[in-house]
Length: 570
Image (cartoon, rainbow, N blue to C red; front, side, top):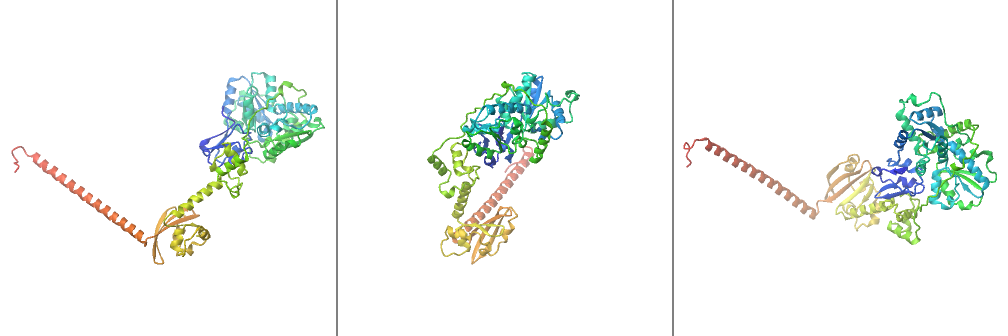
């Protein structure tokens, strides 16, 4: 099966933006193509959000959901509680539209969240030490793959989605189909791990697209005349799970008083907390952590561009109506067991010498070379070197090194050309030139070195050339121009060309009064005259040959026209 996030390689554009934004650097660059390393990914969706070419894609599971509807007699929707922040038509209209697609009923995943909250309170009453909530699948992956010590403190409770899926099967039968719909990409990966509980996980974007396909074609016979609403009932306090702190708030006053409760969202903050988790490991802290800043209402596939505060306010409006709804008063123990162990090594452990060797191989030899500019996507040059050793990064990703190599190539080329070369900007200031240009136009009594050439940069071009019209004319025209210039008794042939429209123009100058150039020009002229004469001779010869052939044909035809004996050859 295709992973929840994948890369369309033909669309990848060498920008490395996904590397810069991926919080765990789960991107592998090979042959200039950036692909997701699924063994390191936490499926937060940042790469999908920031990819300017749309090369990072979320797996489309609508075909799987349609197939499920065709093979199962009854299929139920497990609808994530953040739907209230995203779909604005009202819950009954959304239920009707989902049932029009063929679903038997729509149930709220928040019921599963209530089951999780009940079990979490029970564990805290009987336990001690720090505990991390298990509701967010990206948080679990982040801890397990990068902070194994903190991962040991993740609550051993299944997620609300899995608890709800088991609850629906207990209620309606093991042979039903269950399709989760929510704002989270990581839920697709979680559903893949529990195929016997949740058959398919769709995003809000997928659900909206599917509904959009069928809008206007709603089949009345698929929708009961009686507006049944959510089945088996509406969820209560756990409807607040999608915002940061919602789980703690849903536990209410019955939460153990010997614990201190904290909530945090946003991957950067979470990583800092997990990195220093040992400092609070023995304390009675309960941490509700969510990778999406602000909570699930800001999930990467939420199908809305509304401001976060608007979504948050809408969710609270729904929660206030639900706070008094009846909640579960029992705890089905077999619905909340889990298995979170995913052993993964995020990268190799390298010695200082190995890191130094890698930095040298990347062209970062001196302290000045190690600028930590972040252009490659890694925060420091050392982190880039580690990724290089892991096989996740390529030398070409270093913008500073590539610019230096390109500049060195240009400089070497300029100084080996046996003609004067100059590049100017739109203000007619010199950007770069070579020694031969200064020899031709500056009349410096000594051989100019690189320091002298550097001092020339930024000087006005008119200080060296009598006029700069040819340069100005080519700023907006992408063509070449040849012009003869006379200065100080010399005759120069200049070839002008545009480098960047409106920004840069260049020219190559050659002193055609120099003896070597004179000889070259004479030879070229002689070769041109010889070539033209040969062409004329061949043309004349061809014409003569054609005339002779035509004459012979005419005479032979005259001979053949006479009867034998009428014409005697002499």
